[in-house]
Image (cartoon, rainbow, N blue to C red; front, side, top):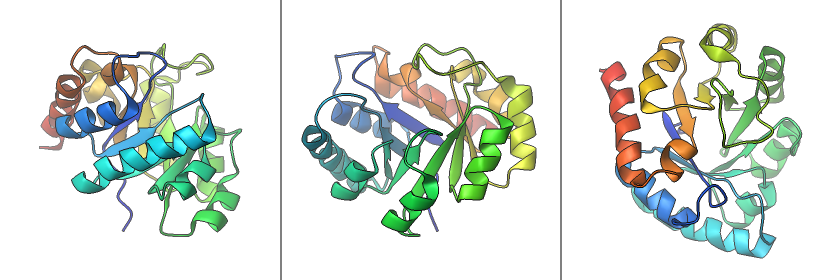
Length: 210
């Protein structure tokens, strides 16, 4: 059975420069993140593969899956656990052919229609949002809000991971809307204490899960 975590940490070294991708993976896992996603928009392919390999070592030792954002070539080369693909990225059906059935493939959706596309194309989970205003992505699009999130959860039989402006204070609202879990960037990466920030999110989730 594929391991789709409840707390996805997307590592980022553009919004901040104090911590490396590997640092963030280690600190996030220590704080309770159960899925790590490498989010790297610049640099060479070779460098990204090396980063992904190092992160993969950190994740494997902790039993946490490593997902590579956008780059299926990097995911294959680094033997990552899967990829996360946006609507304009590598097509999910082709990614499945290349990666095989055992790998995790996540899809991004900002609307109900995009969520249906992810389902039809064979995604294992959907990152839906932005649910709230976010400064992490310049092209994030309009905010959907918890009400639309709830509609997607009720209609799409896949784990729905809420993303976009998620903080510990907003965890209750998105989980009550039916989200399977949450994904965060700046709520952890841009904090003075990424491990502590992750723990706060994990505690909020566990409080709801009993």
